[in-house]
Image (cartoon, rainbow, N blue to C red; front, top):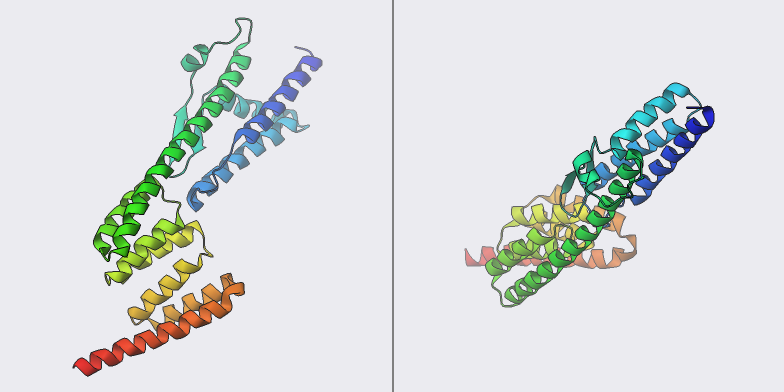
Length: 263
């Protein structure tokens, strides 16, 4: 093989490496852990592309080996979805079943099969996500109805079922947290607020519900901490947060005085 052929192969591998990066996509609703896994995957591909483009022959050779492992299906590809990490293993048997031109080389077959599997997986994930979201919306509606009726246990049940369909909804986490608060289960409510903040750490409702829970539990330090966080992360709503704080203080004092009067 002459230098021209070596150069063409190297150029093709760099191009394919870029295609792999372009086809790696992350859903906007993934969790922080899933997003970090995705970014690690992108970093790995970037390293391969840099090695392939290196002027150092040893680096190029190493990059070709790593690229072959991905393109030929000898590695396990991690595809990120909404709630879990789905692992798809590609091998020569699957690749050879694809309808590819008989004159295609093994390398071209591997590349085409890989790209087709990525496109197919993306489409399937989109369809599954749509179905899960529709189910979650129906279950949330039932939960909302139960909450309005004052049946907070039933509301918790249906919000839980909705969260089984999608865990990336701050609305669902907050709704269940509110139900737990109504039931006096402040520790459980705090856990749901924590999950809502993992999805969106600026979410005002989760921050204020956390403050409310700590106030009810008598933890003034944590209560003040979350009030401060709410103001820092939502500076444009400081006036509203101040009103919330004043209202909560008055409510707690009223509750305490009511208990004392009963005694």
